[in-house]
Image (cartoon, rainbow, N blue to C red):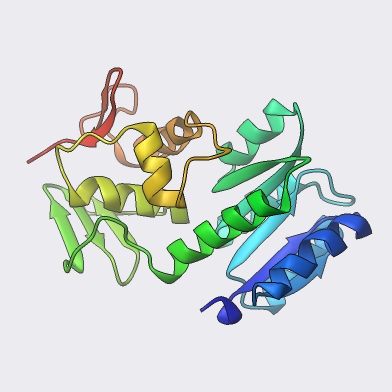
Length: 232
């Protein structure tokens, strides 16, 4: 339920804090505020946080460093806030483990949609799954209740979106999912989003799971169509 979800909102501008806190609280979420990177890490350690909204430009520790440190200890969903045109920040945020990003200036409607989509995934995860609690595909084993993944007997640490994407692909081996379909299924919509961000998450999955990420055996690219998990 939304009223059970806590959002850590990290931005050093009072105007942004006010602008975003009001609609979030109106939607029933609890908002914890932080205005610099070090405070964000403290707040995260003190509270049970379900989602982090994190500005890139922060005093003391910037948002990219905060994202990196959070990702080293947690798979909590992270939405990065980036300035218009700062393509490097978007790419770096995804490289460091952010699940989504939104570019300033943005509409409150768009912002609320992004937040709801990720929190809905947290509340009702495992897209594409029916009743299986454990998915086994050859050397791949996904334990859904425990959110653990093993490949060739070794445990792999995945972010929230990576786990959901892998579970979706593994639930329908051989089925090709386009980038836009993956956005729709994983994030509740593809509006305002760049489908190529899916490529970053896929590359991270391959780096963590494939013997040779440059020549994947498990997660295959279907040129001009999308991605699929190799059927057994």
